[in-house]
Picture 1: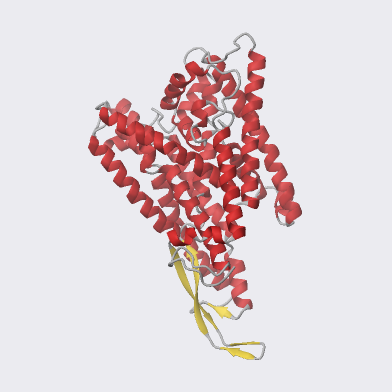
Picture 2: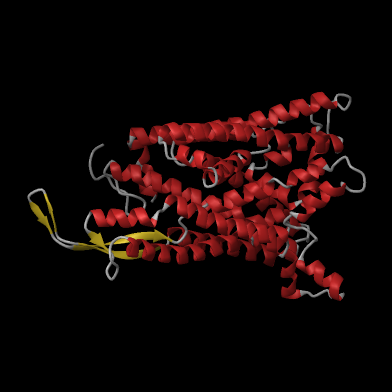
Length: 468
């Protein structure tokens, strides 16, 4: 693998794409350090730490923004509004016939869909940034307290522009760089938070608040989960396909057996990104309730109801109904709340939804029939498509359960067993799934470029097979 990476500079086109990607990522990290205007940065750190600890949803917003939300920089919203807008447009494509037709119009339709996604992103940014501006003023973080309208306007413009800038960077990386630009921006932001989490774990151990055994356990769990993620992401169910004898030109091609590979997790990291994006939106409820009396009233109750660490859970129900305070493994019930249910349901639903988008068993069966291939024991046409759909359905169930289980590890460690969320996120969760998935996808794209230029890929020893 290392030898293959060292051959990248020998391929001009690939090396140009890699340098372009690294340059835009560096620009993103620089912009992520630019603070929003007219915010009292002196009081921001302590207040933001308390807010992130109280509302788990804000932790996910901060994670996806690479810590920019905690520092309230111009990219505090991250790229999540754009992802949320993409989800809405794709879902509407299955409900609104006109949008569905537009999606099938090729490049012209794709351009219109992209424009609608961008406009929707602006609308979502406006709603979220207004809520943040109201919350900042309520917490006394405005550097111009006598001008609430101007403060709100500046914050809204800064945060909206920051998200649109990240959207532009992601699109440019996808067009001229290597890998999926939007996914890479999210991954880089998540990776940027890991050093601070590791330093906090070490400080907690020195301060006596975290046993050393927990640090070792979380590190081993992180390694084990990473290995399992790689195995599941790379795992395939190979369906044998028999090719009959056929004429190609003037040559008779003998019958042969190949395989139709079906990935266990066809949807990749998309379901967890979509689920996290949608469920980060209710955090705005708490912002709107910042200035209300009585602890925020209805808005704060809504934010707590959808929070990962909500006290409206099965454990609190056992306490109130039966006057029972179980310990040990029963602490897992603290994580059984509305967020867990919605996250699991959305992740599983998006696994099937996105798999249905990227893989159509009917088309695959038709293509096999056209080339004279068939699955042994299955007749061509509908019986073949039904069998492929049967297999795909069952392996997608495994992939969906796996994604949901890994994504909920930090919540269980933090909410049920009291591990700080900054440390718990190292052991698994949405961030680790995205990191591993995006890195694997980027490596596959690099390997594709290497193989096209007659180089070995990552799976073999990298050596020069021929000149570029």
